[in-house]
Image 1 (cartoon, rainbow, N blue to C red):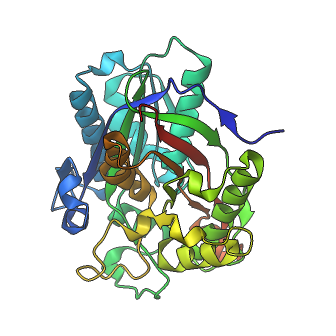
Image 2 (image 1 turned 30 degrees about the vertical axis):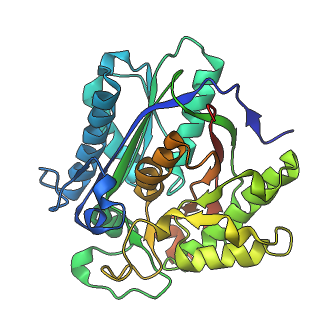
Length: 333
């Protein structure tokens, strides 16, 4: 069976937005965020509610840009890093829109866009759909590692979870289309080190990239960039090492969202950014505007997720990775 599903080019990005916190505003893409809260609280009393509010704010901004009301959105697909995706359900419940919750760890942005485009491709009556992804540093740290107040030291391979949200409204108008999508496979990351998730995810990214090019026979140069979600320095270097034999020169086309979100000189993020808000916010603030303007024509976009829990790591289980993939193209060039 073919892993790749081809679309007809009618499902396009109609509107999008990005919301972030203090560190995201200070980063290289900070001025391109639609809204940032330097307190990271977004007017809420807990970090978990702060993440929920980020999703609500980002969707409202995307709706405002599109000049749409929430009643014109036929379906929501959303996910986050909290247990049972409670951030998405709490933040988006007030919109009253049919909702599908997804969880792919840090791959959630691509997963949600893949699921939404699949629904819209099979049901032409869906005029507009929205995909929302959030992560919050303070909420994620105490769920997956230790609360930041604990002051635990990080290894050089560790990454900084982004306080960021991205909302995308897909419709039947716009310059940038989702041309293809491909689900990822669950791939053993060969490590149980929770401080080295970038390396663990690199194997799933390599599998998706090799599988995609084997099925399509495209040259790497068909794309302006092959974009991964949040492998960071460690994972990006390992990915290029894995691929260099079968795809020599891929390092010239590969770029990682986890390397773009923060200024490494201003913020000690060790190996780079992580969290599903990373790829969502970088796609919204950086890559989609470049595709819209025509500076880029085609990209492969793979958010990368580490499938683990604190319990699985304590029990010595390896971290498994997942890397769903979408092909984005400016169809008007």
